[in-house]
Length: 336
Image (cartoon, rainbow, N blue to C red; front, side, top):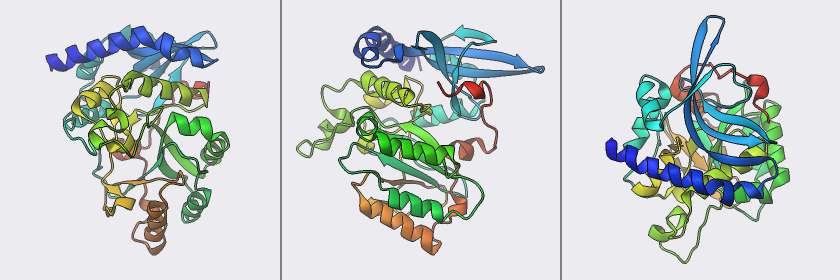
């Protein structure tokens, strides 16, 4: 554990030095974006709640923080804090909050660092299933027909929960598609958890897997993580605690580096286009970015015939926390 703490301290010091120069200058609203770890404690109506701050930055010159609710895994934006902020290392914070869902899930994910393919959280012990969309860079528009058909299969009165793993390049080249997805969330059609899928999502057919995706030799991991978070925030998206590696490919060094930023890697045990069959607790993966019709078609087929019960599709955060509580603190301030 001491070695883990030492390595991640180096990663964080380097990131804090280079981020204001290499990332924030490209964006008009957000500046001095950096990893920052602290416990935020607030008492309301004789109830004390603690939150984990993982980032600090200036939004239109106002200091704000990105936080995690350690019991619900929800993230949010903290403005004008009324409680106390105590800076600490991520390692110490996780030890202090060892009983929380975030700390337990973090430690579980940390044990999966050595796998090159599909490392991270791949399965949840629940009777339901989790559906995830990957929006990798694409020249094609979002598969709106697939998404609309999937929504139509939901006969319940509640929003359909999905995880959207979004890349920066996709956001920048599909502004109208992104706005449409956000409208589905705001209108109650979808309940979206937004996961980081890296900024550039590099891929080359000419390179072997061990040198591809984020394993490309000159990959700046801090830039891939933080610039994508900034891009999400600039588009009114609150990044969740989850990070999905492009291609589900990583190595131990990069995996632990990403976790050193407080994020939990997300895999999938049912990548439908690869022939994987979903079962109870599966994290299903499809690509509605127009590049992988096989997976989206299979999901619709399975949902239409009842092999996947739409009513049993659950939110990943709720599956882990097993309650309906959300981080209500500063709810009116979530949108920047």
